[in-house]
Length: 315
Ligand code: DAH
Image (cartoon, rainbow, N blue to C red; front, side, top):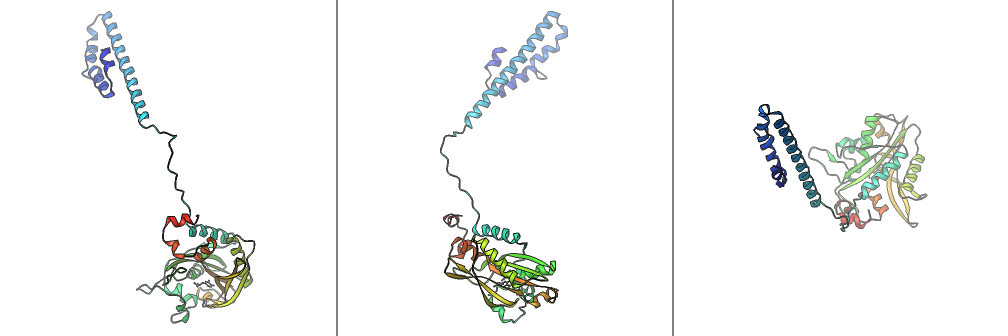
């Protein structure tokens, strides 16, 4: 028996022999059942034999298990000295990175971030913004119309209206998101992004607007200070309206955003009394600001999904 056990070299065969020996109909089991007919010496001998066999099985089982484990470890061995392919590291898209930066800055100025739907109704995108049907200013934006009269949001200014309607005043928010217009060239994409600011309270003035814009631009472009030029302009939802230019690289003026004091009609449209509350709004192109910051010249590249472009630009 001892030799038989030792000769076995896999666990399945060992289990089979064990069952043959100690199982319900096993040979040893049968002999043990006859124990009562044996004289004391023979009993003792059988007990010893039984215990010895069990011990042998156990020892062989441990040996075979260890051998199996060793074989497995050898097969799964990793050579840590081999050269590996370098890992590709991910990076944030420039629009995502600048979105984080803009959010951090405006939140530190006390603005709360808001969003709104990209498919807007006429009221929020135009009419409430003092641009009723047939108003000539509707032509300033080449709009994508849906068959049911809704539009693809042409401006984040719609978020101003939604925020005032739901939150009332005083209010200090910035809206952020995708906007859509029928235009496409190196500096225009049919889908682009805007950031909209709105601050309405009892004593908000144009000075507060310019101070916030100046501090914002300095922080965003990581400059000590920025030089601004304020030009009168026209937007239906602000009165007076201005456009803000920023001195760029010491010699050029770049237009960076539109802004103004919120038109009394807009406040009234949101149920706010313009004789008590006033404030400012501003809006700018997120893509454009990011292009300036990172020195990019084609807005369409943001949306190509070309990882090589992201990498070549060092993001
Ligand atoms: N909505 C304007 C546009 O898309 C940008 C803008 C101008 C927003 C002046 C404003 C503002 O809130 O006050 O061209």
